[in-house]
Length: 618
Image 1 (cartoon, rainbow, N blue to C red):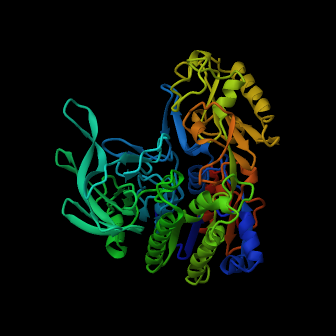
Image 2 (cartoon, helix red, strand yellow):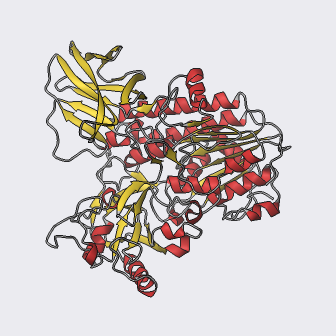
């Protein structure tokens, strides 16, 4: 590839609006409620956009940024397993004690543009932690952990008796109510006497002030907070030993002081002015944004959906949080657009995806949590956020010049999630998986109760099935080759017949063999089978973490009521452009080769890069 400066002197702008559904977009355009989207369609093109298999955000955005399938870029599910140990981990980031490790295993779009010295700006693209070195600026997105190293762990203090069911999204503590309470901010792990790792803690005092407010004191900070209100960003410093410190920012939300005391503390984000791991390139870019725009969420998935699922926050404070994240992201985009003269700029907006996850139940009368008499604002919140995306698009369209390119896309669509399917339970009931205790009604998460000496297949993630194969899995029992391939086809055939007895509906639209959807250097690491569920059905949260519940299927009673984890054929995204799309059946794999073609890469050089897509424009 040429290292000389590119003569390209136009703008290429891509807006990534996560999760926009073709059905909703088309309906609202026809009703005149998305004027900017409609204008862009009339000027250029609008198409449905084929997504990845599986239709997961990190998988799809990795495909967007590489132009390659998961077998080439290495990102094929939220959850991955180590076959040598059966240990599970998240695919979004790999952090050790010294530095974070890049997750995507092939070259990304912004690395191509950078090598041609095309000015490049990337704001919050998923699976970009740690940031790549580019010819421009990058702020990492989905994959940046909180200060605990998780994807977001809240803390909640309450004087109400704790429920028997355990919170999975946060650390919840019961405290005794008094006029002055001593609580803790929970930080990263540090070595304790004896070598055991414990969480660093910063004590803070809460003083009740009248009937609906508190005063909070910690380190050198004092603030007052009223019930039903968010605090501003607060700063905290954890001492980690050996002159090491972790600086974080977070927000308090005082749920109530009467009749019970309930205090929510957001996941503690890295302070962008001095993050523990680099979250931008150059490293000072995150600090520059904070100086120009104020503090902002650095955690890759900033909205706390689990606090709502577990009823620690209600819809209204959650919506306030989502609005604040959008305000921050728009400020970043406007800041960059004001100094963007030429080159490539990408900005990612996660809010439509998150809003649909949490509010779909208000638009689906068939959902178990549907409320006929719900507040009108909640029934209209999804279209309201589509209109917000339309406003952002309109403001960007005003900044385009002659010959500039604008592309707007979503990585997948959206639909209702009514019933949760326990895949490991299906495997057990059909004789492919056994528990250590054959009489046990269920098995716990993290695959810990499985008898590997009698298990042929197991499931983790959101529809992935792995064969317990000899010489690959630590305790594999299925021979590689014909025995494995026969088992894959047998499972595929039987899973396609899986029906929901409660509603007498087919749950599975298709089952994909590994070789049908993954190819490349990392295909051997991918699942052996992937289930493409019908709309309404999704692999359960328990399945994702390797549990084996008692029942096969259950109603989805979490507020996380919309999803895209269905058969990719049923859940396409959208793509708009101010240029005519000439390629039939565009897919998310086409974006990288399209951008390179626009910016001056020759057809022959594009063929050398092993893309799974093609340019969208002639």
